[in-house]
Length: 76
Image (cartoon, rainbow, N blue to C red):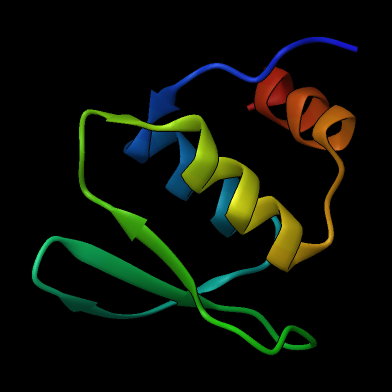
């Protein structure tokens, strides 16, 4: 299993849109995404590189494993 490293917020947003998430709104420097079937919104701060814990928290909310995430990121 590969390790998840920091990625840019732009690439993570591209990943979310590819997963079927919809941009809802922006509050300050945080963009909020929603997907049908999940209970909590996904919050992505607009930083150059997202810390790993933010990526992992959003993956947990989406119900996506680390391996699925790494495969999708490689294909984007």
